[in-house]
Image (cartoon, rainbow, N blue to C red):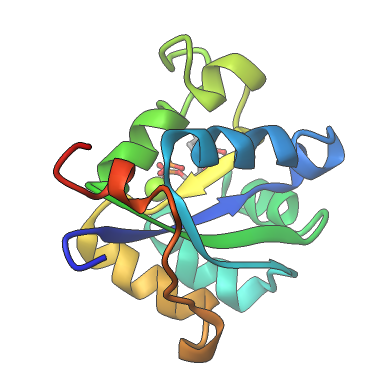
Length: 155
Ligand code: UDP
Ligand code: MG
């Protein structure tokens, strides 16, 4: 939809290990976010070096990388009105014990790095991260019967 934003989400290895990937995806779906790209993918060291480059000098960086390589992750692009901020709101604060109740991280996790989900934090990073994980022909545009409720003027 012309007025919508797109954002990159990763469902992290703890969610797959704990069989909560469906629960996480369901929360985004229920909000009305449209899945426009989706795949299971393994992260390698160089991808993580780029993706978490802002944390490269942190003492937990090596643990974070090995955690993210425990299983494949589910990578997806979600589309919706204000999707970047809305998804961050649904995901909650980085530290699950500081996240608001009702968010994925508060409701389903207790610790870092195993906080269930990654989500782009700005329009600039969303653009970079969508390109990091998806080729153009892996990203779809389609109409859903519910688009008028989620994207329209209000029906
Ligand atoms: N992380 C960690 N320890 C910390 C801070 C972050 O292990 O003290 C991990 C955690 O998995 C987090 C990821 O590094 O989600 C990326 O950190 P960032 O500050 O970008 O938080 P996010 O954008 O994921 O909320
Ligand atoms: Mg971040």
